Image (spheres, one colour):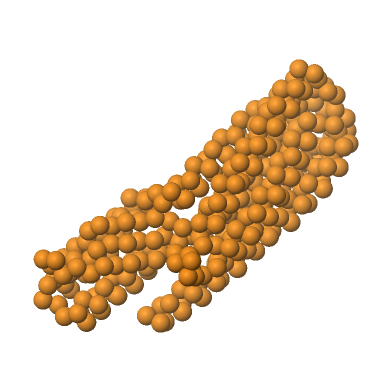
Length: 302
C-alpha cells in the first residue's frame, strides 16, 4: 500500500504543478491582451474593442483568483479538511461565472446605448490587425488550458478555458465589426455585433455556474462511473466477492470519491477479506483515474 500511496502522491504533485503553470500562463496572457486592447480601443474608439477589453480585465481578475484556487486545492488533507481542499476549484469556478455574467451584462447595456446613440470609429484597419493578434493569443491559450484541464480533470481550469473562449469570440466579434465598418462605413455594425456576443457570454456564465454548483452540492458522478465500479467488482466474483451495495460517489476538485459496501463470502478469514478488499481498491483506482476509494467489507449474511 505504501508504494501505491507514494505513486499517487507523486502524480498528485505533478498534476498540481501542471495546473499552477497553466493558471500562471492565463494571467500573463490576459495582461498582454489588456495592454493590446487598451491601445487599440484608444485609437479606434470601437465599442467592440472596449467590450473585449472589459472581458480581458475580468479575465485577469478571475485568473488570479483561479491561480490561488488551484494552489489551495493542491494542499493535502489536514485535521480540519479530511477530504482535502479540492472544492476550492469549484468555488473559483462559481466566482468566475459571476465575473463572466457581469461582463456580459455590461457589454449588453453598452451595446444598446451605442445603438441608440451611434458613435463613430477610427483607424479601423489598425484595429483589425491588432484584434487578429488578440484572437491568435486567445485561441492558443484556450487550447493549452483545455489540454491541461483534460489531463488533470480540473474544474478550475475548465472554467478558465470557458471564460477565455468568450475572449476568443469577443475578439473575433471586434475584428469582424471593425472589418465591416472599414469596408461599408456602417457604424451600427459595431454595437450590433457586441450585442449578439453578449448573449453568448451570459450563456457561458450559466454553464460554468451550473457545473460548479453541482460539485459543491456533491452531485453524484456520471452513471458511467457506476458501470465501471460494477465491472471492476465483477472481476473478483470468482475470488470471494458476491457483489456490492450502498455505492456513493461525488467529486471534489480533480478527485473522484467512491464509497461502497463490498459483499464477500462469509467463510473468509479477516486477513483474506482485507487482502481482497485492498485488491478491489487498487483495481478501482487504476480503472478510474484520480479516484479515492473507500470500501466497507460486509461478509455474507451481515
